[in-house]
Amino acid sequence: MTETILAAEPTIRLVAFLGILAAMALWEVGAPRRRREIPRVVRWTNNFALVLLDTAILRLTFPILAVGLAAMAEERGWGLFNNIDVPVGVAIVVSMLLLDLAIYLQHVMFHAVPGLWRLHRMHHADLDFDVTTGLRFHPIEILISMGIKLAVVAALGPPAVAVLLFEVILNATALFNHGNIDVPRPVDRILRWIIVTPDMHRVHHSVDPRETNSNFGFNFPWWDRLLGTYVAQPANGHKGMVIGIEQFRTRRDLWLDRMLIQPLLGPASGGALDARSHQSRSSSVSSKKAEPGTDK
Ligand SMILES: [Zn+2]
Ligand SMILES: [Zn+2]
Image 1 (spheres, rainbow, N blue to C red):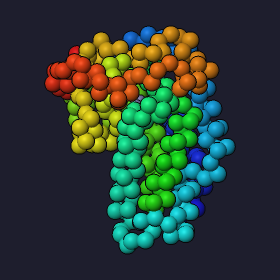
Image 2: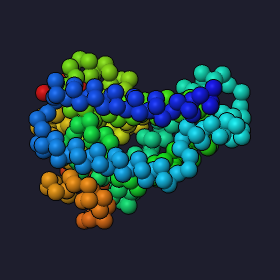
Image 3: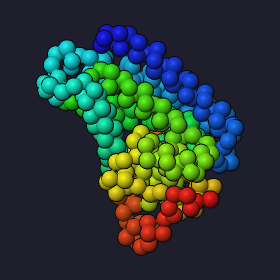
């Protein structure tokens, strides 16, 4: 079973990725949520070039990735679930939840630690918000994330199929929730109880640090609601809000070479620590946030 999963992993992941990417790109053309500020050719060429670079660096750096490590842990009896007797269904569900919680916490950490925020803010510096924004991560952030994921897998000993499912779902939801798509408001209201929707994640890409530092979930929306980081809608509405961060706002900043050196440029403002100081300077933002459905 595990061998079949390992053999099929690259095909499953590639087919799911390309299929969902194509579907989202068509959906964005058919029912866009916001008007584009930047021509697609500028952002898409550079964002896709970054994906290729990230993938190459990841493969060259790690001899084994998360699904492979889960299989190895199963074989050698490493980690919690390889040492306790629980039904495989329970192990799969709990593993996926804990992996998602780990990703949420890691995302909060990338906002809270200034050095890590310098890496992660590149994801936020995209000046439009569409399906390719979901792929835009600095290669060093990709490497650190994989290191954390491997540590979680080693400690948890999840079934390899749970890790594969998690990876495919996470990849799919990241493409979906960065989509510049107009999901009807009543549908969004229901959907955001189950998965992170584009309207929910778009708040996270607001230029306002108080909104940037909210809605950290990529996959399941529950952690934000349970842990107090949920903001329902942007204060200026989805059409009026400004996407990006304050520091990098020129078209040149969207080029691959500039993206790669962004961690070394300027102050580390805009992260969670900065948002806290904003909060103490001005009082009332969160209490005035609109509820789902009240936004235009
Ligand atoms: Zn973020
Ligand atoms: Zn994002």
